[in-house]
Amino acid sequence: MPETEREQRALVVGLGISGVAAVRLLLAQGFQVAVSDRRPKAELEEILADLVRAGISEIETAGHSEAFFDNRDLIVVSPGVPLALPVFIRPHEQGCEIIGEVELAARFSAAELLALTGTNGKTTTVSLLGEIFTAAEKNVFVGGNLGRPAVEMVDSGCETAILELSSFQLESVSTFKPRVAIILNLTPDHQDRYVDSDAYLAAKTRISQAQGRDDVLILNYDDANLRAFGAELKSRRQAGENLPEILFFSVTETLAENGASWITDRIEIKAETLNGQPLLVELKAPAIKLPGSHNRSNYLAALLTALICELDSETVLKSMANFAGISHRLEFVGSRNGVDYYNDSKATNIDAVIKAVSSFEKPLLLLLGGYDKGADFSLLTEHLQNNNVRQLIPFGQAATEIKRQLPQYAQDFQAANLESALRQAETLAEPGEVVILAPGCASFDEFVNYEARGDRFRELVKRGGE
Image (cartoon, rainbow, N blue to C red; front, side):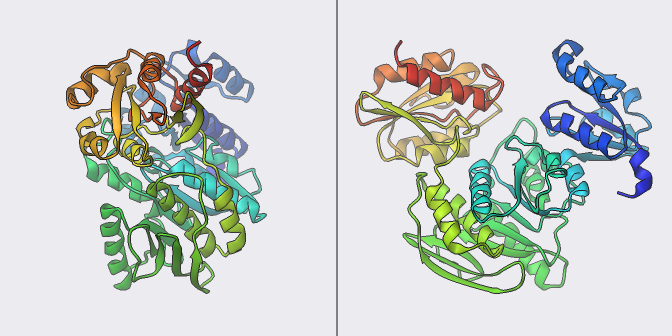
């Protein structure tokens, strides 16, 4: 930003983790900062006390008012705040720039950006990339949607920033320009925020909107929407438009074009590095610890990214073999009386549930439920039948709707909460079977987030029937 903007009036909307981090960055850059949050003052006392000590005097709580948003030069919006709110109309008409925390971070950071999005697998893949770059002794920052605010990369001194980005975060980027962007997959999600699948697709693909010919966009060839999107961009790039190089990856077929394939135990990569060096690789696939073809796809995306960044292949493969996944994503919790228990609390949409149940060959007892985001649970019908799901136990606020949409699987059981669902599963499960929490719903009916839900599940499993 030009020096003259550093004394401008900024407003941060939403005081979650990323919002508070944005406030601190703006203050450090010399902005005059105000804050607005829809929550009542009583819920924000500790946060507000810290902000007052930091020098914030303009504070609005219990809602957002047009008058408070007037005459701002910059508004930074937290991901949970929809840009469609009427309160943003007048500032936009007044010429105020409205951006998100990720866009703000990128403007003040000199780090090379690797950015990743997708409906499922984001945190797994970004965490794997972080371990690969760390093992290669790179000065790397890992953050974004997985917990550490992107703005913290500004003062981290990192050379490379690996960012997990949600569709909500991507709604508010404009000049954000990753050197490498990755889209893992696109399946219906957040039907309560997006009017249709096209709107969701448009939000996700904003990750590449500012990329140019020297940048790379990595796409999942096995996802029909991404294959079509990539083919269109390739055609336009060949026609002379300033668009990124497209690299596909696939775990279902060997690609004739540049990209990466993982078929049975062989990996083939044909591409160029970011420095324009030819990259031709054929290797035996490492044994990985996470089950399912979707995880093989995530690993392949990370491998392709690391190799075009010219990391040592032996280091990359060793990191892949050692990576044991993350909490709340197909996390093995324990075994009791011959029954295995898995925590997939991060599976908050239908596609994630499908991937979870497709990862096992043993008979499954599935805990499905929580806060309903408007999901179409009937899409699970075929997958429950084909993947040895012996019993479905719906729970929480969504339980009644799940029973209505899946009557053939949920006739006999319904639980008011997670603990009740698990206790029912413990009674029903037989040796050699798997009980998996893959809720397909948000957690807000009972827990503050999916982590708290997964932690509770883990605790309950370890306690057993006590």
